[in-house]
Length: 494
Ligand SMILES: *Cc1c(COP(=O)(O)O)cnc(C)c1O
Image 1 (tube, rainbow, N blue to C red):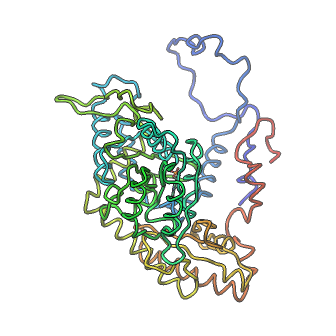
Image 2 (image 1 turned 45 degrees about the vertical axis):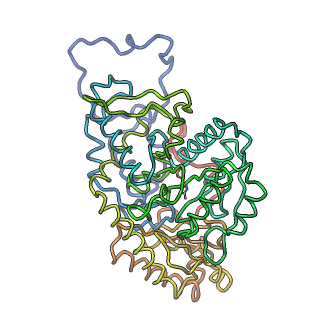
Image 3 (image 1 turned 30 degrees about the vertical axis):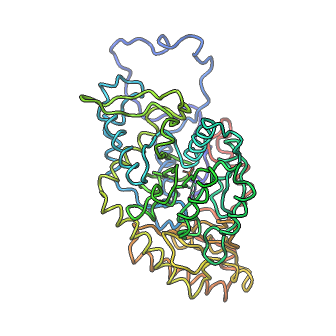
């Protein structure tokens, strides 16, 4: 690959793409339509490039991108499943893509119907009374859910409840959301045998702090890929002391159509539509994190909520106890259209089949990898499982990071590394349901080869990747001083 493809500072003053001759129809100059105080005094500093430079730039960037459409992407917890093109077609329909959020309601009846029906589908899938589609991501759903719980306790004059229990294997967003909602996050230990909550620790915490408990946040199956069979008992214990149960729904791909957080005893749940319902994600967006609640929390939901009248759909303004808006009415609407399309495409039986296939694929990989890699919790898993490379580190000085980097040489993305935090040298593997047997077998064969390399030629692994455009980066430098975009005045300097 030439140097040209590696730099952003392209172009030279005066370079242009081909343009048509000036229109001979008289038009009002654009400048006259913009208020004078908003007009620039000097032109914006922009790259001046020829058309071929422009096209090559974006083509090269697209070739250097890795996504689920280029290869296997077993990034645990992130559910990088294939995103059906049908979803894209529907989201691009002009009636959906070209509307304005404040357009008169009678002109956007289809949009309102979609929002209304998606809310109902999600409520049914989760076993909840109502859903708001406003939150833009799982983390945003968590914060919204905790705000609802706070409003609920306040309405009962129990504002002193300030503790949120969170298992030590939870996703980092859980304690972050609890802290942001002005709660104190308290850790619950994982049982080393079952991989679920350590019940004696939970009981002790409730004994000491029950009266101050606001909620517990649980992911089930959890980030070890294990379903906590004590969940009904946990729900009973939490409710007994007046707490609420929050379900982190990021792992819903394992329970779709099989069980529901509402039936497990949860009061609030968020969805990660970008994970479970196949909308493209990564690199920070886009997403949607709707939350569902049981009936006692409905009065606190953000508003407005969609409603169905005799003749039409409309927005219903929220009641006095609502926490207010957490985003524009329609949420991240393009993502919602994709999720709606996905749910309608598969239907109830299809959704269940998705979960079953995701679980089967994960257990197949776990079984095939077990001779070469230690499974952190060697139990039947749900949609994902966690390997520990501690043995490879001890015996060959090859770490989980090295193994992850070496996988890139074979055209695959790496599993999630060093998470959950309670597993040393963790590699968290989630194949999803959309992969073929051949792809799964290829992954297994490469993982076996890497283990063999670690034994016989560890340097090959510790210096990987070798075939990617960019080798091993200085991660701290890349995070602190990223070189991601064109900067004025530095053309040709790299
Ligand atoms: C992805 C994830 C989240 C956060 O969701 P975002 O949509 O990325 O904000 C929370 N919990 C778990 C277990 C996750 O995997």
